Image 1 (cartoon, rainbow, N blue to C red):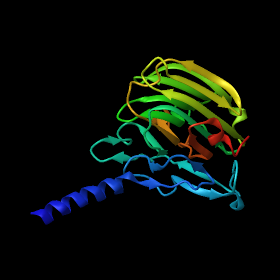
Image 2 (cartoon, rainbow, N blue to C red; image 1 turned 90 degrees about the vertical axis):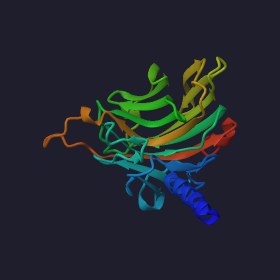
Image 3 (tube, one colour; image 1 turned 180 degrees about the vertical axis):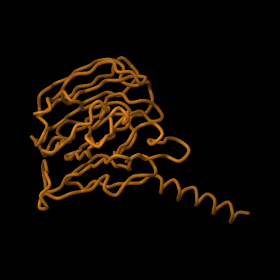
Image 4 (cartoon, helix red, strand yellow; image 1 turned 120 degrees about the vertical axis):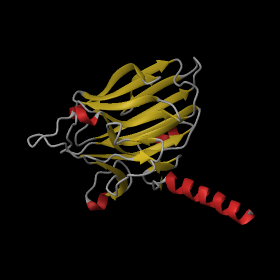
Length: 257
């Protein structure tokens, strides 16, 4: 009986770790956090790759960056929990560890020259989410540009443009966030773009659940894009670099400024 019980416990432990789907960022690309691939199953091989400058890929600092790709039909799922395919979504993202309270987070983002928009599909490229809860701060891209989308209880409270499209295509942009992730009124967000403060908010930032940072490509309401012979759903590719988490500004932007 003890052997059977031990085997079951080990099997459960193994399954949990397999479903965790870990993905390591080299120190050249990220620091201060560890990541798992989005959702437990359905993550494609082309979804996320570490690439090198020597192979012709764009890099913000150092010699490497991380490349995300989403093709039509790239919908993953967690068995018995969530299914992108059934919820009109598709994605390839990396999800970080849980945290509460004050946090500094930085990342650099690059859209290739041939980047294709999928508007009116909702496109997030970076977001703060709550564990077993809703998003709180999303970085949305549409036909007009890149926005900070502050949310609470799955409802947008405020959207502020950070960048125009022409400022993103074929260029690196540095995003820095300082936040206090709490349901108390002492909460706040500050968002800098290329070392310029673009957004500031004070007040509750979560519903009280632990937060975590996700980044990559996340498309919602995919069916809004009409697929036809003359308008094929485009593949999207995005590069991220310098994804840093820390307790102070210097810790996360040290390689950039």
